[in-house]
Image (tube, rainbow, N blue to C red; front, side):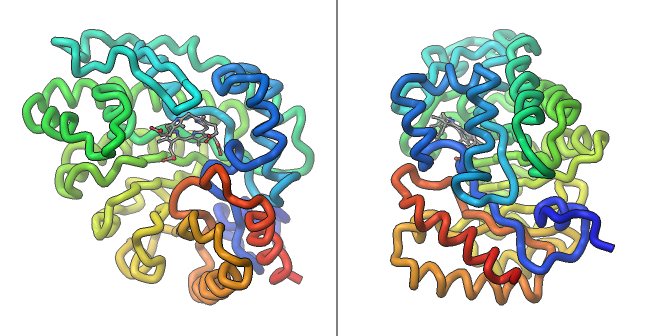
Length: 343
Ligand code: CP3
């Protein structure tokens, strides 16, 4: 007997589904008119820190876009901030007035203050009050390397993080200490989110591709495993999004995660051949395809449908975050297209 009527909960609990679950990275902000109105009067940090507002924004994509899962409205940079790195959320994106590369002993600058994360627990409680039915909430953190990149160098418009990669090779022990600090804060963070009702946990390793897969496997993956183990202690499945890994996705195993979220550069069928069959997949529609005419989008959805028929352990998503001026009607077209298939 099917236990879960929500397809996201069904798939992550290994039940068969008649259509794939659908959610999209960065679905909570960016595109939604209700969210964009709110940002005219409230800056991002205010929304994130206010449990009522953050809960409302978290749930908007369920009602306004027809998504099957909500993702907590917060940011990956709350962990660097809780470790003592100054972060400013400006209208241009995050800014770092004192990136750690300017310090002589970066690791000595850090001290973890869990009080900085209390607002996330309050938001999750408020979501539980506001939500109806069995809508699952996905919790998340940044991947250890992505957090390290921002902490050491701040934002890098080139996205190469050359200074950070150089640092990994020249200051290996110091870099490992920083990764250790990020990881133990993230272990605490996953435990906190689990205690406040999330159904799954995603690790956003958005800058996974700035180093070689070999260096990642050797230096960073052991830390990812620790975050995953912490999530599993609380019964949570883990989705890992290693953006830019390329063929490096073949090194992942059940020790690392339960699902691999595939970026838009890697064909999904190729990803399925490369990734350990014990792991489910998520992804990977090119976010800019959502600007195309709906007839073109439908052709791609048909291709994804064929994929689903052969690979049911799959969650529909994008291969990176939604773009801010994506037409809302095209997002809805996708969620409705899959719901039609169910009938
Ligand atoms: O896009 C990714 O690669 C996903 C991982 C990631 C998040 N935040 C997750 C997130 C990254 C790399 C960030 C850093 C960050 N923080 C950025 C982009 C990168 C950069 O260097 O410019 C930005 C713009 C922020 C600040 C921020 N975070 C804003 C303004 C918002 C609100 C809506 C939006 O996206 O414009 C967020 C929300 C956010 N960041 C969520 C997640 C999972 C919440 C859920 C959601 O929006 O769906």
